[in-house]
Image: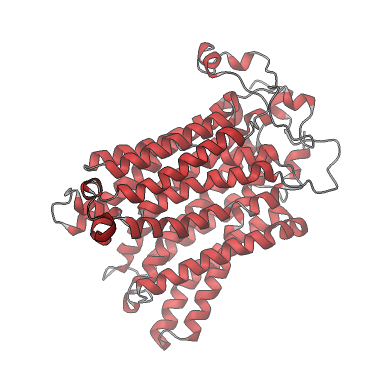
Length: 491
C-alpha cells in the first residue's frame, strides 16, 4: 500500500495549542445559513398535507384508495434516491469551486422544482419535479461544511445548537401553508373563486409560497454570504482539467476573498488540496459514516413506527389514539427536543464532551424500544391512564438525548476529514449513506410493523427488528473515540 502524504494524514484541526477562550459566533454569516437551511424543510413540509389528495385528483389510482400510499411512497423515494446518488458529488464540487456556488444552485433548483410541482397535472410531472429537487439538493451536506468552515472547536457546539431551529420552524409553518392554501378556489371562493389559474392548478398557490421564499433566500445568499471554502478554482478550469483528474496533481492557492477562520487555519492547511474518493475512505471517515448511518437508520425507523403505534388499536398492539392527539404529542416532543438542544447542548458538551453525549444518546435507543410493548401492556391492563402517559413521557424524554447525537456526529465528521480542503467531500460521503438510511428505514420499519400486527404473527417482531438496529448503532459507536480531539491531535 502506498503511504499517504502528510497532507492526507494530518488532521486539518491540528493546532499547537488548544484555544482557551470561546470564539464569538459569526452571526453575520450564521443567520444566512439558518435562513438557507429553512428552505428545504419549508418546501418539503408544505407538500406533505396535500400530496395524498393530489394523487387522487390526477387520476393515477383510478379510484383504488389502497394505491394512494404506494404512489406517495414513489414520490418520496424518487427524491431520496437521486439525492443519495448526487450528494457526495455536490460536496466534492464545493471543495473545488466553493460552497457558495453550490448553495445557490441548490436553492435555484429547489425554487424551480417547487413551482413546477404546483403546475404538474400528471404523475410523471410530479416525479420529475421531485427527482430534480433531490438531484440538486446539496444543502444538507454543504451547509454543514459551511458551519464547520466558519467555526472552531470552541464555538461549533453552540452553533450546532441552533441548527434544529429551521427544521422545527419549517415543520410548523409548512403544513399550515400546504393544508390551508391547497385548492384555494374551493376553500375561499370569495377571494380566489374567480381565478381560472387556481382552478386549473389547485395546488399552485401553496407551492408558490416556498418558491417565493426560496427566491428571496437566493438573493440574500448571493449578496451577503461569504465564501468559506479555503481554496477554490473556476468551474471552467475544473472542467478543462478533466473533471477532477488533473486538479489533484497541481498546487492550489487560497482565494483572496475567502472567509478564513484565523483560529483554525495555518499556512499548511490553506495550501492543502481536495483529495480523491479513495484517499477519503480512511478508518476515521468510515467510523463516522457507520455511526451516522446506523443512528439515522434507527431514528427514521422510530419516527416511522411511532405514529403507526399510536394509531393502532390497543388489542392489536398499539395505543388507539386519534389523529389530533397524536399531532399534539409529536409537536410537543419536537418543540422539547429543539428547546433542550438550544439551551443545554453547548453546556453539556463543555462538561462531558461529544463522545460521552453520543454514547449516552445512542444507548437510550434500547430503553426507547423496550417502552413500546410496556406501554401497550399497561394500556391493555389498566386503560390509558397515568401510567401509560408517564411511559409515553419517558419515551419522548429519551428521544431528546438521541437527537443530541446529531451535533456530536458533526464534530466527529469535522475531526475525521483528512484535510480542510476535503471537508465538503467528507460531509458528502456521510450524507450519502445517511440518505440511504432514509430510503430503507421508513418502508422496512412500516412493513415489519404491519406484518407483526397480522393475526398469527409475533406482535413483538417489530420490536426485535428495532432492537437489532439499536444494538447495531451502539456497536458502531464503539468505533468513535471518547472525544474528537483525539483525532485532531493524533499524527
